[in-house]
Length: 419
Image (cartoon, rainbow, N blue to C red):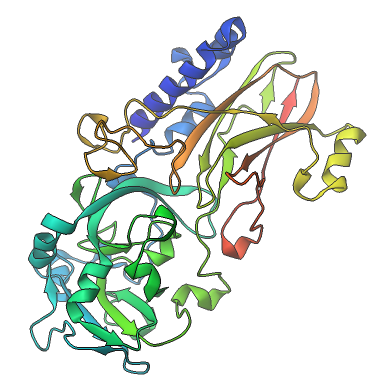
């Protein structure tokens, strides 16, 4: 992971700095990511700890729940409880308290539960794959980005022949045979049956970057909701429940979280040295999460901490709206997408990519992008670097949804000293 990310980001950043002529050459010599003899620099170390555009399965950050976490169970226990491909079975049933009418529920009792082989057989004609960044609602960095593959949930839902009184679909995974550990998420049935705004479908996912979904990533099968935060994409899936309940009943909502908030657009800066030389060009790079509202710009503002004129920008308008922001450049798609996919190329028939594996639009919604900027340099003093996104509707971060419990989007602050 570390070498993949470093190499890919170096290619993108070099491409940007070469465009800037002599100033770009100077910046490259001073940039720890690009200078071969400074790989032990704190910036290079910080960048090396992050994933490439696509993340290998083993390199995703893990925020799994459970005591013990289901992926840490011994293999014999996984076999016993259906957490292996040869023992997995999915029940699709009606909610006992708010029943939906269905003719053919899929149950273990009737020996009609869906097994892994039947799901893969369905995938031969119905499988889809798409790119998605997986993030936590309350964490300001991606857990990983992957090409997720599986069967649309609606294709399995229709197997039960629902008739009426169906308003909500909720689902949960294995929870150590302990009811208090159950972690449940839900969707309105309309989102399961139809894909609004050109979104990919909600899927029963069994592959990530072309490989079988590992136990740590939620295998053998998990839900993946393209536009949602990670808590909607339940791991170790065991049950799908069709319900007439009129509202969300997600476990994550019990802790004051907005469970119907889709991915936000925001950006962060990769760390740089805390002390820099006066007058020297400052190369800045970072990443942006491209949420449901898209991304058109990344902007940077460096605030002089001792300048009262700069202080005015923090009080005259909310979220530094009137500050003198400078546009950064959103970097082109990488030549090598990383993630362990063969030859670093996006596989065919991936939603959002053409037959050559090139993205149809860039930056791609629901994923991430890298950005770069060469600042001409600063006089001695103390400064704060901030960056923000402008979405496809010309709305600046953290708007239009600045509230933390609907997803992280705070404007990052990074302090430096110029000597």
